[in-house]
Image (cartoon, rainbow, N blue to C red; front, top):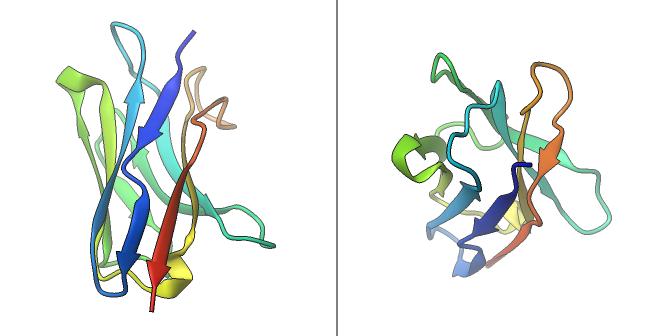
Length: 119
């Protein structure tokens, strides 16, 4: 069973950058899609961006477009979320998730990592 482990969260000043990592266990990792989500206190979980594995295509929420970038390292079974020009409103717990069993719902989730952006 695939497990996802996130790392890289922390406290950063507005305008700064962070890179989150999502490492998948197992020899081969080939989900249909990988997604990054975030949930701020008192708010619903929102999607941040998606990577379609077979094509490498990425899409992003309007709120992060141009500032956040999803990439991957196949050799390390790791997906990254590069976050630049961070704003206080980016403060949230960030989760990676995978569609391991095929298209549809995200069936495998990481534990989350806190990102706090101070003004």
